[in-house]
Image (cartoon, rainbow, N blue to C red):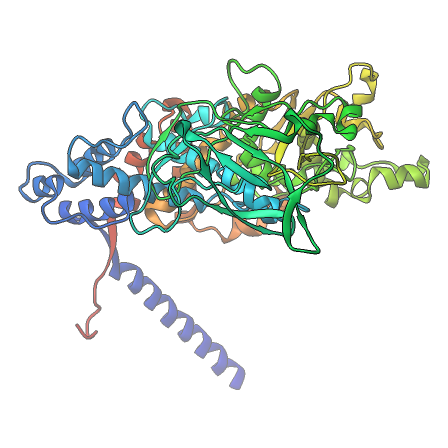
Length: 586
């Protein structure tokens, strides 16, 4: 009897819960936002601020001249950058809206780029990462994405195929205590000569490196890249005073020129593709015996070109955001003079970041059944060979990640970084850090560049082989992408032709505008069964909506159009309204 009573109680309880659930569903309904509310909402999402009551677009909405959606579209068009890359400054309202939108959207793009600190991404960079930050803008990946939204002429595919890198145009805040261009460039006494005038720099030196230089009279004069000539001197540890470096010879080797851009600070006012910027390191670095044996050329490099065009043909398409010096340095993860070996030493972090930042995927991105054929058969391998191959080649659960990381990392096998020295590797290091390319050795046997999946190990010359790689992953719809890549340039082109980067871009804009996140996992992978089962019909609907807009973006190539599509959708233009149930307090 007790059991029957307990069972009956459970039935009644479940009926009660279901009744209340259904009632709650009926009490929560969606209703369109009013035109004025929609204007306020989209204005905040696009500019990060509330529109003033006197704003002309808001006035037109209040008077009934235009609907809320039309107001949002008008604002989206108004905040687009002009042909010169700057905000529209034809009147004060457009200028204010343009600057607010540019800086707000830029901050949002930064949320989706994982690494933005050179000092934590380059082991052994130490004191030189500070100087690097003055030369290479760590926010360039976010700047490229922001420009793709606000430049009406930009195709989104160009994010992955550009050969030239934009520059952030900024205005110095009136309250700032800093000079407009940072100038931590080198060790030693500097004689600055912009416009024919000479200025002495005050030096602050710690641990053999000048951490900062103040120019009390140069705020107005440092408006463009300046040729800086200086004499190299050392700090006498005993007397804590400066003295001439006796290792330097008399004549031209005692002075050098650094030509470089200095990163502006302050509020963004535009994103421009204008002049070339080159970074020239001391000429003695080219005489470094270590690099001479490897055939490395440390000639001046153009900081506004991607790595693939800097080291090869500068014309035509490049490798896009993946091959910028900034993105590579932010995600390299290896010590200076790194040499890829095809086994343990590979630029894997760069691949992981590429998938996370631009495809919205976390490794593994292949199924275990895809990785299983790539697992090495260790039964006929020596212990020495096994050690060289790496333990991750012996189990499918490890290979599922490495099959993607290591194969694609092969396309960046020739890339490394260095702190050029004024004299030699054991003496005074240079001002900052730069990327370089180990030259391909044409004398190596081509068969030694066997694809990763067919080799047990690779030799020490792996970093001198042609940059053969492979794009190997499952798309969000379960398709296996398996494409051979022969250069960073080709990687950018192939990725720009796939659906995933467009769907990922839409996912981020959808999240920004609605605060709704969707998953772009491979639904056909049995490892994702729990994710699939936890998704509601509403979750699937939102995922399909994002995928649909991703395909549209691939066709029309305009992120601004995608933003308008999201604003027009019910996910943005409607709100959930709660209706009080009978007896509920009002």
